[in-house]
Image (cartoon, rainbow, N blue to C red; front, side, top):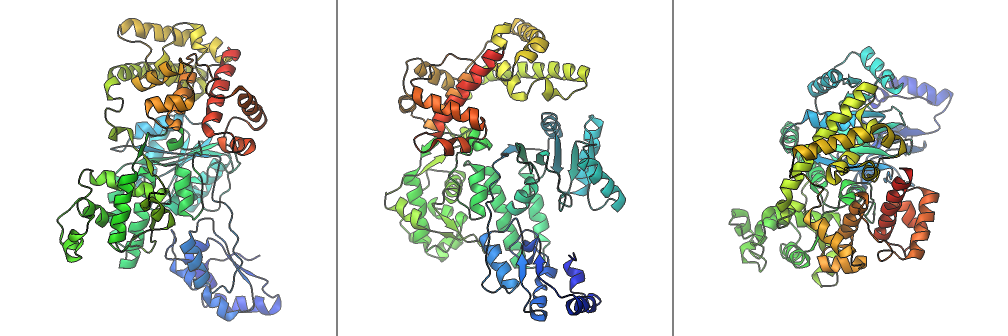
Length: 602
């Protein structure tokens, strides 16, 4: 096997060598790795790759194979055309990495403490990706000052230093590699437990490839992306430095697709897989949007307005123009095309541009609307779009809490009290961790601390009901934490275990032995939202009768499936149980099972 870069492969000096190999030994096949680099629609386009087609002309009888892990359908077609493949056999594996947990952490300004906290809460090796070499050096240095074993990696370092840093990371001599995208290509470290993007990636292919370096051993791993709106402007600046208008259009569209992913309210796995042309039903339970779902609202009428506007604009315009028409904007472009005379002009003035953008993004993510991938982002109707327009299909979208009236705004005093206690518990955790020379997460996870801050257990029996408190931790840390909570409650007379009003309302109805559907109907909330409430109540140790929620015979079958397949992820459980079992039923039984296990271990 001969490995060679395309630049050398096509050089004048290399040609005679290749000819001699072909004459003396023969060439069995040509394989192009990272084939997405052939396509200008790929995320790492390199013009040199285009010239590989010259080998097709020089050696027309030799089979050629193109390999890549990140190619959309458009990129796949471009690879076929550019490499002049004739009736190729196309083999596609699933893009789904079911063991990865995807989450977005929004931030208005760069927050190193947030990054440090995230890393301290993780176990095992991890990679932190930064946009610039300067950021890499700065973050690596600050992590080292905070006793995190971290090293930098970027193209500006000496080759020997880069090789040494990579070797030390592979051997677990250090926990964290802080790197630019130069790091990762070709390495095989299967036990990377987390990948954090400190800066926004330029496109979804890059994000999928870089985040995919986590969990290659099949074990659970976390992919975190920090989103600072300022990153968008930074990437836009670099896009403007590109040579051609075509490159700029493609780059801008790819950047907007990343922003749509970040700001999306649907299952993140669904969004990523749809981008690569793969369908996924949602409810992965392995992303922040599925784990902590936002309330669903019926926006069928609004969807019909938007889709109707797309149709009346003859499917020739992008999202921003359609929104301008709906909101009755007085813009020259609208008048030039006569769109101010359309029946849909101004019918959407009751909603903000952001609300319409939320709807448009949701329609795209649900497959109820299409968009061209040629850099112009023109909206196109599909068969499902027409079903919505003909009133054959309803549309529900997930609405962020801040856009819902009074979304838990009334309960900030209690939340602030819990936040104060949480900080106290974190300080205690750090003291214990430092004394034992272990990371803080070894003492208790952040999720356990949050439950302690909410429930405020006043005795060891109550403390044992907290998720994550087993026999060992109860014996070794229970007294210290209960004492800290008692002192806090004495110092804060208003402190008390609290439930938000929405949780309290769900809990009250559950005490009337209503079914899941009955509770959801009375609360006028989705089954998924009510299920999340009930699971949280179980984690807090609240007495819930599960029989009205899940039939006993179903409980038994779900418990057997958990014992056989494990509690995470949910999809294998759902697949094994079949269509007669809902995700809501599985989640509820799992939460009840976790509570019982924690209670028995104490």
